[in-house]
Amino acid sequence: MSHDTSDNMPEAHDASHGAVATHGDPFADPGLPAHEPRRTDIDERAAKRAERQVSLLFIVSMLATIGFIASYVVFPIDEIVYIFPIGHVSSLNFALGLTLGVALFCIGAGAVHWARTLMSDHELPAERHPIEADDELRADVIEQFKTGAAESGFGRRKMLRNTLIGSMALVPLSGVVLLRDLGPLPEQKLAHTGWDKATPQNPIALVNMNTNKPMKAEDIIQGSLTFAKPEGLEEDAEDFQVQIAKDALMLVRIAPEDIKDNQSRELGFEGILAYSKICTHVGCPISLYEQQTHHALCPCHQSTFDLADGARVIFGPAGHPLPQLKITTDEQGYLVATGDFDEPVGPSYWERPR
Amino acid sequence: MKKLSARRRHPLAALVVLLLALAATGGLYAAFAPAEKAQADTSAQSLAIDEGKKLFAVGCSSCHGLNGQGSSDGPSLVGVGSAAVDFQVGTGRMPAQQPGAQVPRKKVIYSQTEIDQLAAFVASLGPGPVVPKEEAYTPSTDPAVAGEEISKGGELFRTNCAQCHNFAGQGGALTNGKYAPSLEGVDPKHIYEAMQTGPQNMPSFPDTTMPEEQKRQIVAFVRHTTNDEPNPGGLTLGSLGPVTEGLFGWIFGLGLLIVVAIWVAAHTTKAKKS
Image 1 (tube, helix red, strand yellow):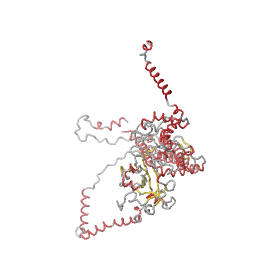
Image 2 (image 1 turned 90 degrees about the vertical axis):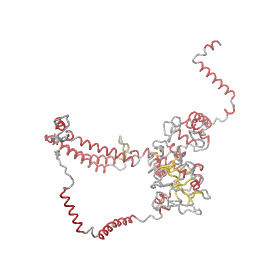
Image 3 (image 1 turned 30 degrees about the vertical axis):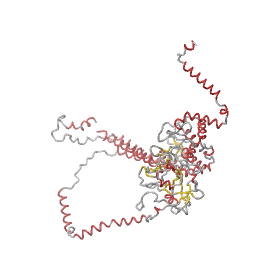
Image 4 (image 1 turned 135 degrees about the horizontal axis):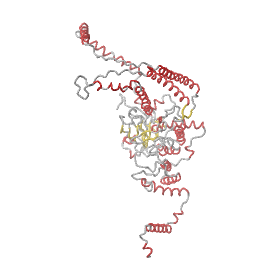
């Protein structure tokens, strides 16, 4: 082996060692090293042993597959066992994973072992050739192209050429038309929420998401966070998820002197502010509310809104503040909304008014 | 007199003088102190308040002011109630180690008796949420009721808590270095008190918007999901969702495959020759 190694070194091919190479390439092509047979190539017993090892791996794989099928039948689906480093796991999952893993690993290991010990490992050099065609062929192709272009009259008959370009430019439009199959346009659905029927004469009560009951203003204390939905929207309603995705509110109470935005203070009731819970970036439910800083954070892309300042965006990709609902109390003191949000909730879209 | 002046430079002389002075002051105080004050109210509650006031003066007053009125270093404690004290001191958050974005949980340095005394003193400053009774936060032991409690608690947890604390109660990041801590191994009483009082930046969930019973259901769910619930697949990877799992897959799964590929390639007869 040491003999081979010294053969590969450039100096072995360069007699004038140390001097500037003057005759051609200083790094001589070392050529292919001599083929060295493996033990299994010369020793038939070693080859037989390797063969048995590969077969053993394949047999283990077969057994593991049988074990997989057996454990599927044997282990009950809800049995939990304790296995040391992993903890409490389902015995079925553990057995299935272990046997399938062993079965696949042994096939792979067997194949690698087979390739390394028994398959031929003779070196086969393949010369590289230039990719481009030779000059003669290229000249011929250019000549044919020119002849074809002249015979078609493409350059001469301009009307043909222009109509061809026109028809080819219009064909992709049929693909655009097929997009219609994606469904009807949303129309005004995005602009309206469950609160849009609220009027000063006919207010909609804010219902607590936890208790399913309307709330009084004194129920909302400073530093608390409450989630609300419009009265009449029931959780077992067929379109509940569609509705709540637009109607969800978060209610916070901020000391009126701490509210920096006058308009926001007027929309609220004695410091109780009702903001849309839907992030204006891509519509995640946003309610990571920090009661000391009054920041609300969106867990998806970290858009941060200052609820004390009209839900102004202070960080992150959201494009505009969270819409705020105008709330007040009815004669019994329950919190009610007297109108819809003044802008669509959730992320921007083309037709969004602002 | 000569004997005394001869020893006035003795190293212990200062200590003797100090002791004499202290004894004299104490004696004078005992003699002249208004007697009716000492006799006033000896009920257990007022004793606890007195003890709490002393503890407060030593441990808390440097930030919260001698009378809990607050200062530039700490908020006013008027009206925070005994539940807040029991939570903050009982989880080791207070006294805070250093000012910063987050006050983390650490070793508790007060005994429960001392915490109760501190709580009694702070509660005397103004009305606020009181430490809940044990039955308020202890999940039911009846399996049928317990199952329903856990299931309802899960729904409430996902509505009110999961956004910050993660759906499995493992905690998560907030803004500017703040974070919602993991709920693993937290005492049920402290979970309950946190919901009542809203410690640090956590919003509170008062009984008016989240009744007592719902708080108990949430406690039951948190206890179940962080302590008892087995994980059928083994390794939970922190229950932190697709990011952790993806990271694990890329680094450990693909890393292992690369290591195996390198090993296979490095152990051929070809590789040995050069």
